[in-house]
Image: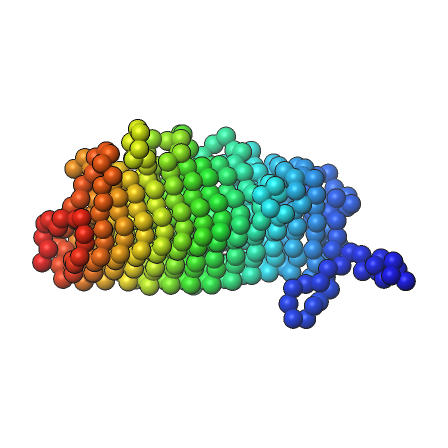
Length: 413
């Protein structure tokens, strides 16, 4: 009797939630198809419109573009899944998921020319600006494989996705942008209530993690190591960058992340965390950057200054930003660089070995109505540094107080 009951439930799992709903599970390896991609699509069709799960194991080649339907989960068991498509290989419709077994579930970039996106929200793939929702991507690795470089496409491209999560994903040596939230705002949509948490980024060639149009966004607990690649387009680790005048960058939190570029293969990479509004959008703030550790080079043995600025705020409409309790070490340029912004709060940040070569460790240019307080500068005794807070341009009505180790210079009215 017990054996019969066990067999009766074969092919089903209980969905998480209060209803304990059973969902059907199908094994893509058992379906017909010329490649793993075709087999996954056949399994997805077999599930129909009901909630269900598709498992696939052992790796293989994805030459056929995969489309995961709403309420379906693609579960990748350990293996290397090599993509060969000339378009993004995995498309996720609203409320669908891709879940691996850990970082031994590996999806590679396509080797096709100019194809760098690996997983993309379905509606975003059809039209940049459309809304997507309810996507979950976790517990897998995306590995670079393309021979070229790009600075626009993203390994994981979520677009204007609401209620979406990327968690415990390793972006490993990809040749363009790592993960991005936000698409065009011309239809009135934006990324919202979404998060990228506990992910690892190594040797990402371009921006590692970005949001271009979003509200209620969380980047927390991520690690960024050895960013940049030789011959690549240049790399900023975390980039908050609206592209259009109607884009949003509101209620964004960047917290408890580690950026460490000491092992980068390039002598000079980009910035640690950039918060910018070059598009002129007024849909800005509040933005919180807190408890991050940024290591821009080595201050022992052969001193290196690979990272440019630690935290860089720029743009005449950039406002309502709080940068607090961050640790910033060994930058080639400023530990904190403020340019053109207003109503920002920079407090209790610990900076070691920042600035040097005539570049101040803390730059305040055309900044107004802001508070700079309780920040500290220390020098390890190795390499060039600059312990000045230099105030320039039309900076006015700012508070400078108790910034230990720094000297204040310039127009401090």
